[in-house]
Length: 410
Ligand code: SF4
Image 1 (cartoon, protein in one colour):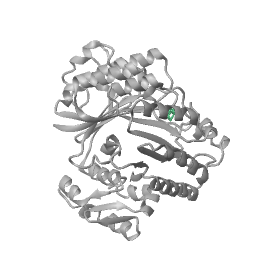
Image 2 (cartoon, protein in one colour):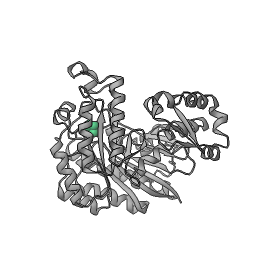
Image 3 (cartoon, protein in one colour):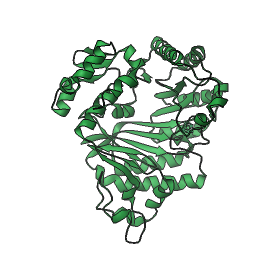
């Protein structure tokens, strides 16, 4: 059986953070309940297409999945368990925000089989958290973190963000020191990206100035240094872990160019899937998503196959109602070139780099034959280095990784 990861999108948050362009927002309890019911229907509806797969990782992402009741999260897992072959040692992660759980909920999540928590903190400075529109304080985070440990979670990620308005390397250092003192198993440290359409993008002038490129680089160095000194190793450009605690689910995304690495199926609003050489994305229109599964007749949609458009004309059933097939949009057959590009620009995000042998094994052609010029260019400039079979980014290369990785687009 082949292995795959399952991503479950929970698009709800207590309120929108000013920098956020994720598919998420506040919702009524009634809407959340209808969404969970729909998500379960989608999971059941898709199950037979994944008969040949076992599930190695499950990831509740959002949004703020922990905003759901524990029972709702349990019901989604139960539904998956009833219809999919889940590995006994599957990594099961839920993203959560401080202030959306309590002792009881955490104990229930543990009991349902969740074995990895990813807590969104971003900064240990309450003034910064307020500025970002976060719903919690650092003290709320501490309470959630401690309760998670008391509930028995031994694999916890903390999400942090640097290059925030008004932030300098000393502020960033204080956040890193406070968080590493707690010894979570994993730390994600992303630089803020100002995305169009966000509150921050539209009112940037109301915020303190953003750190310049040099300060941004210094903050990256600060993270690297403090995290190395406290026992974390950088295994991906923005992700650090204690050995053995790398996020298995996210590694699927970064390594999926490699032939034997797992595929992933995404369920829920706007969720992406890549199975074999076919990629698609669910609609991000909530009404369309809910409507598609509202009528039970949709489970008889036998003609629908993975990665194929709904065979029913215009996605309409004979009764004129939406069929589930047409929640899948942006269906794309990945070409060999697409896959070679992904192999390189996603694989090089991992600090152990990409393997020439795996490239040749996957595509039947040597990496040098396809990328000779690009490899020579960046190796000669000290941004890439070859060690044994592997090519990887150097520290200097990580600093300008966007530029280096973009060069691998054919
Ligand atoms: S909690 Fe996360 S997903 Fe929700 S609005 Fe804030 S950044 Fe976005």
